[in-house]
Length: 137
Image (cartoon, rainbow, N blue to C red):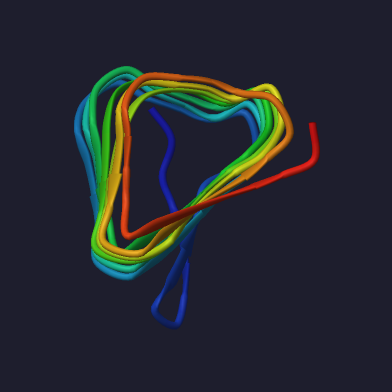
């Protein structure tokens, strides 16, 4: 189990760290590549999850950027915008803002209060939003 580094209201996880239990961060949380959470992740601010990272249960956050090849085995709940980068796998997304989905993402149902923007080919469940825009193939 690793500690987090705090600089102001932003918290940083060490590269390659793992967290066995549930994690709660009051502020923004920047997670580098190959960091693993074996419980729930709750972030009151913005979450930036690095590439090839994983979360075993659900995520709650203000807004999120999920890195390429990351895996989230539970639902992702955000009060703001969500961006899913290339090749990530997410169980489902519930966002209060806009959702951007990049190519080759595998995602379950996506629900958002604003637009869903899809870049390229994805695999998904039901997509529900105010509007939808598909760019590319």
